[in-house]
Image 1: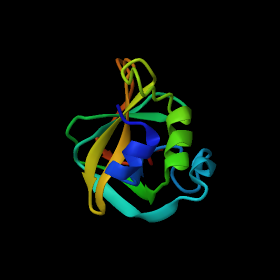
Image 2 (image 1 turned 90 degrees about the horizontal axis):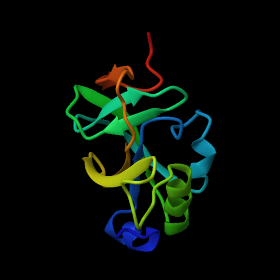
Image 3 (image 1 turned 120 degrees about the vertical axis):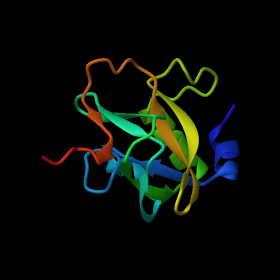
Length: 130
């Protein structure tokens, strides 16, 4: 179980790849978080599921993420936004897993729902640039 306080003790970093990125509509959920930098992760693939993306732990040619340092309250806010359920992580919209970044291990929200028929983004970022 990864309650926000224990999770932040494990790693205080979170990597974001969608609407939480700077300049996008949900970035305000990261108010108070410190921007650490950008990275490219080859351990995840993004799926365009409409108004936001969902990541899966599948190899890619590199997905762009932004890494932030968060406190326990900030991680708890993100858990609420992402419908991460501490006691039943596979039952919410997203699960949370640690992935290696250039700045150290960071939490990344992984999409739990069906992605059949969703456009795949194996390289670059979201929103995909044509």
